[in-house]
Image 1: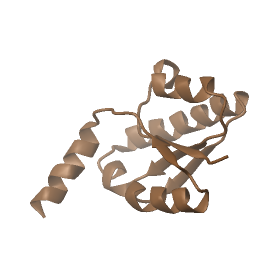
Image 2: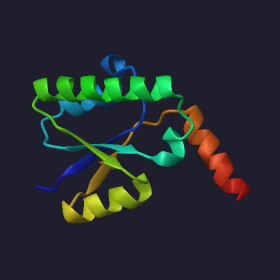
Image 3: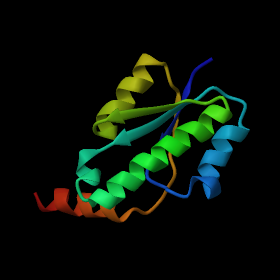
Length: 113
């Protein structure tokens, strides 16, 4: 059976996160991925970074209770995801369509260069 990658972005309200609910409700063994992309986290204040680390810690605990594991990797998702997909023979990648201020800011910065 091929694996599926579920790529988490920074939706901090994970108890109301429908994407997360779908992951847990489906009877599959997915790869749950969170990429710490420096192009986005660069814009975070110290307080926000601290909050993010606490959020990840709580998310990991929550997922462990549901017999899931969160894979956290530092790097650019566009490089990490294809390698994971190839290594684990993944045929599907899921991600939430969320609007993120920092993501948009990063895209604008790239367009200027």
